[in-house]
Image (cartoon, rainbow, N blue to C red; front, side):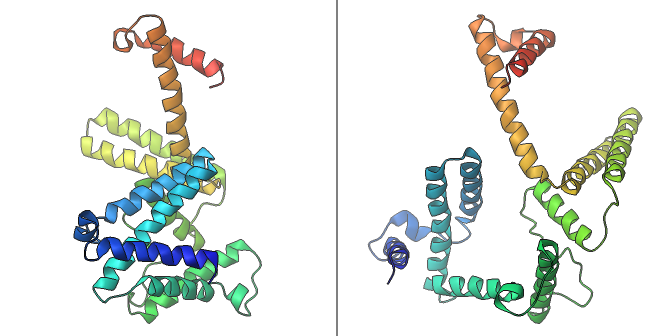
Length: 266
């Protein structure tokens, strides 16, 4: 048995003990439903570790995410449904099945064709399981629990693979400008429902611009929020250093601080 297999078996045994008689009261009382949100939290912490560039943090967070897989698998094993080996076997078989250009005789021209084949194989799998009716949408399978920006990106990407996409970047930008104009019209009309709808269209079009130009809106917005937080904290520091209170200052003074922070290249 290899070192990696030893460590995996150790982890599985630790979880069995935590859930078993004389184990941890908290672990024993959990269910897949009660801990489901931890999987999302741990996945985001993996993303944060990647963005931080810290290898040690990434190693730790990947372990935390793996724990969620092991935890769920142990609970389902106790119920006689499936175990960790079933999970590992299933994903291994899926990877082989969805990479016929690696494990079979299919020849592909590049990554775009790989993605097209991947979607086709997924549809075949769902049809074989009876999960989709004849003529089902290619949008089937986009997780509803995804963050809205990410889900918009995935929906648009699926539609684009089917040929439902703009011809050029200028066309996408023109649509964005059209949506901005419609937001202005809704604001002037005073129709709150119309304004909410148009703002939604504007956000969706913004995601489409990012996607068309090869970027992920979720990633870009996360980076932008991080930049804003960094600059805002520096503005707060500058204000405190002057002996002032942020809420007492005019927007003009705060903007001057903001521009000073930007000029510093932060």
